[in-house]
Image (cartoon, rainbow, N blue to C red; front, side, top):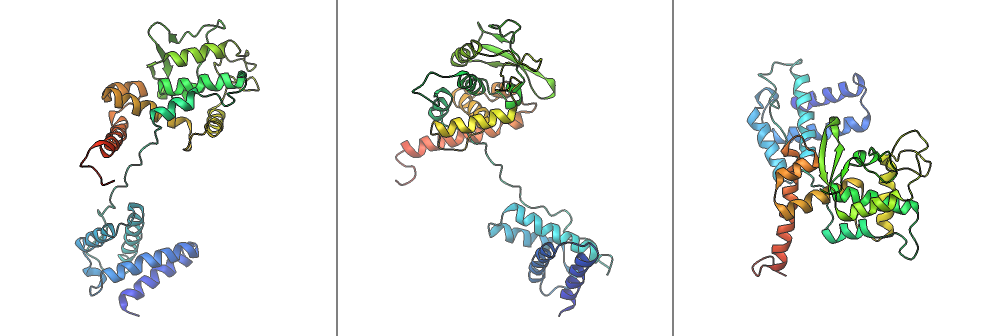
Length: 306
């Protein structure tokens, strides 16, 4: 065993005996450090430089390793050099300051316009008269898609003190006032279909039995919870044949994407979503580009070969 490899073996033994890491974790450290050994062959540990580590990180990126995998290796190497500095003289930790590539931002899922309209506008039992639960579901789903509400905002809505009144809605303007994160109030649009669905629900809405004035009431007579909304939406999506996995935030993403596609007004979408920073809203510009790229691929004669 070379002197370099011997230091690695001592470090792994320390992880196993002193830090009491699991055998699986120690094996992972060993694999990562063997890669470091191979990548710095011909150099003693004190001679390994920051540039060497950057070269190895670039090579891993060139092999299309996931940023998370590169970050794990760099973390293992960083810890090894930190430990080694207490054993022998090192000019510094060559891994310090080397960062893995940023992980690609995962775009939120958004339904197509047709799929979103079909989802929120379809009755699960088209052959039967909708019951109270289905009218409640229709009102919730229409409102989430119409206004881009978070599920917590939806569950927190109150009805008016009169059975038919909704004090937070300006029907003439087609707008509503909701309370979002940080108790910040904002105005959101409410479409005609959402208003009609709310009216239908209010005709059958039972009085809450938990002392609240909740707009949406569970089968137990209490304010509906975000989890129940999630489960109902998932079940409804399956019943009406929506192809993708649907959760409440998908409707919010779809709202934002569709408004941006139609208007191109990122600032307006930011206000409607209640984002404190426009950076949170800019992810929807990527969704919009996906839509444009799809149209281009389907329509342009010089696009991808068919």
